[in-house]
Length: 311
Image 1 (cartoon, rainbow, N blue to C red):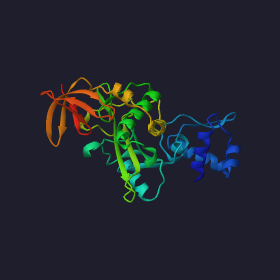
Image 2 (image 1 turned 120 degrees about the vertical axis):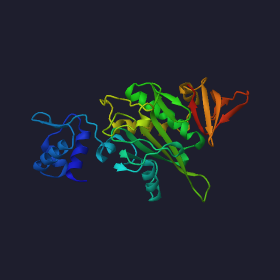
Image 3 (image 1 turned 90 degrees about the horizontal axis):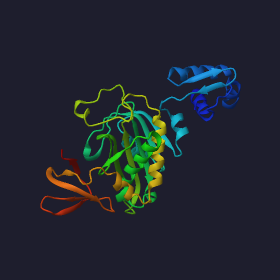
Image 4 (image 1 turned 30 degrees about the vertical axis):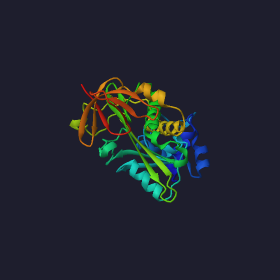
C-alpha cells in the first residue's frame, strides 16, 4: 500500500482527526509526504481539512476506493473502477481460488445484466455489488433470490428511510418504478453434486450519474435520490446490503416478503416461452412461489417466469 492509500485508511479510522506528526510516525514517512498525499487525495475529491488543533481530518465524501470499502466491509471486498459486471468478476475470482464469503464492488459496469439476459443500466452513481456466499451458508438455495431481495429492502430502508415494495420475484420498486435489480447464480461442485458457492448480484439506482438514461427506461426506473444529493454513501449501502444478505440466510422471512409483494390481488400477465396468459396474483406460498389464478379458474404456483402488471 502506498503512502496515499495508507493515509486514507488512517484518516478513515480517525474521524476526529489526527496530527501530521503522528500520521508520519505510524505510516513511516515524512510529514512532507503526508502533506503531498493529503493534497493528492483532495484533488481526487476527498474532503480533507487541516487545522493546528485537530490535525488532518477526513469529511464525509461519496468516493469509492479500495481503502474506503475495506473500512466499511466486514468481509473481503474487491473494488473495480469499471468492469463488465460484478457477477463476471466474482466468478473469475472464484475460479482463481478466492475464498467465500467475499464481495465485488464496481463504480460502474459496462455489461451489467439482470434476469432473462436483460441488460442493466449501470452508470457512475449507482451501487453495483456481487456477494459470493459459501454453499454451506445457503441452507435453501431455492429461496436465495427471494431472501436476498428482502435483505436489500431491509438495507435500503434502514439506511435511507425510503419505503420499498417487491415485485415478485426479485425487483424492488419505489413509487411504482424499479429502483433495484437482483440476480442470483449458483456454482455447483461437480464431484460432490452440491452447491459450492452462490453469487448474489445487486444493482441499486442510488442517484443519477453523468450518463443519460436510455429512452426506453426513463418511465420505468427511479433513483433513490433523483436530485443527486444522497446522505448515504455507496460504500455504506453496499456494505449494509452484503451484511443483510449474509444474515438472512437460514432465517424465516417469507411472511415479511409476502407482506411487501405489491402485485398480490392484482391482474397480471404471465409470460413464459413467449406465451402470454392473463391471471390474478393470489398469494406467495411458503416456497416463495407465486400462486396465480387463470380466467378458467385453474391455479398454478409459479417458481420462475416473468409477470407484468395489467393496467
